[in-house]
Image (cartoon, rainbow, N blue to C red):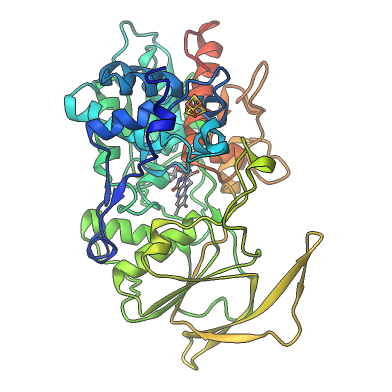
Amino acid sequence: MGKPTGFMEFDRLSEAYDPVEQRLKHYKEFVHTLNDEDAKTQGARCMDCGIPFCNNGCPVNNIIPDWNDLVYRGNWKQALEVLHSTNNFPDFTGRICPAPCEAACTLGINAAPVGIKSIEHFIIDKGWEMGWVVPQPPKAKTGKKIAVVGSGPAGLAAAQQLARVGHAVTVFEKSDRIGGLLGYGIPDFKLEKTVIDRRVAQMEAEGVSFKTKVVVGSKDLPAGINNDAVEFVSAEQLKKDFDAVIVAAGSEVPRDLPVPGRELKGTYAALEFLIPQNKEVQAGKTNPINAKGRHVIVIGGGDTGSDCVGTSNRQGAASVTQFELMPMPPEEENKALTWPYWPYKLRTSSSHDEGCSRDFAVATKALIDDGKGNVKALKAVRVEWKDGKMSEVAGSEFELPADLVFLAMGFTNPVGSLLEAFGIEKDNRGNAKATTDGDGCYATNVGKVFAAGDVRRGQSLVVWAIREGRQCAREVDNFLMGSTTLPR
Ligand SMILES: Cc1cc2nc3c(=O)[nH]c(=O)nc-3n(C[C@H](O)[C@H](O)[C@H](O)COP(=O)(O)OP(=O)(O)OC[C@H]3O[C@@H](n4cnc5c(N)ncnc54)[C@H](O)[C@@H]3O)c2cc1C
Ligand code: SF4
């Protein structure tokens, strides 16, 4: 423990943001990493708990007290080594993880928790700045070939772990860039894509081969799912050519809104809006959906909805409203009831702070036609929740002008035809069926085919995808070699 009295002496210091008026003018990241002195002070706040709940609250079990201490002492390089020992990509999580570790921090019971995420962000950015993040090619090759389908955080983490122990790994991706939802989906203002590209370069130097614009298993994708593929590889071919296959294809089917008027022009699934915006920012291809001067309604209150809010405001929307079906959560959690678990409470993102009217317990009844096939308004009703059941409040119907409606109600399951092409059994939610514990975990019912990330667990978080990718890599290595040195 760096400074025994640190938690009493120093307040939590959050990372600074560019002012709203400034950051709305561009799509670049606007969060300022802590400086060296502030990082040390924040590290000093850690109490080095006998039972570090943060470590358990973190899905990759980051060894947080150790790197807090190392940061306090200015031993950045060793802090980076400890950080990398549990997480391949702290540069992703240091930017966009909701930080369940901080919800679990003991200091958070009666004070502001340690700023774990900002310290993580500091360590990894320092690592890149100092040139300490370098390729770690294997000492020897095993001669085994592994295919990874999907280049999101799950696929990338699995690929990196397996390449480092000497396997020849090829990642197949149907998009024209690597990164999964990190590349196409999550806006550049939350995660600039150079952050992914430098990891891709590192992995190439470690021996990973990337094949973009290649769709695996099935070309039959539901409408609205991004597909830049110019090449097709069948599931059979992949199984024939490789010693093991990891399906890390995400959970791409968006939840739809079956109301009258859903088909009207101006109504889109969130990623139909967000992905072209990534392509505009990254490659100059104009996003055909533009919110400038228009009234936008976003349906759904999670990360995806919030990203639609931030993007609409950057495009210059006249107004942005976000509806959520559930009632408004409490602004502060009751720590005595929730700690160390992830609390149910109101979450206000940086995008909300940029301008958004939020309304809760609202159900959409219909989208109204302007007479030319375009949406012009949204008809809604207020709802009440009792014992988990929803009922409409009589006489509470209302209408709001809407030129654009973005549906951000989550994702229901992976593309079924991909799993069917491999013959992978599904669970009752339509995800790839595989366990995460015990013998044969991450293995599907199909010989030598494994599954990890959102495709297995359903829509989730980047940090969970990294965990699953790492753990799955360990199982695959063990399956191919009969033993493994990879950590779980
Ligand atoms: C808009 C948005 C914002 C989000 N914001 C956050 C956030 O702030 N923080 C956070 O922690 N999480 C966030 N998430 C969730 C997070 O992005 C996902 O949980 C995570 O990316 C899942 O990783 P994955 O590797 O399992 O799948 P994905 O990232 O979905 O990657 C799967 C990849 O597989 C490819 N693929 C699919 N089928 C095929 C095929 N047949 N052939 C070849 N390639 C294929 C896809 O094109 C895709 O690139 C967000 C999600 C969305 C949609
Ligand atoms: S729970 Fe908080 S105070 Fe305790 S070791 Fe973890 S970061 Fe430090």
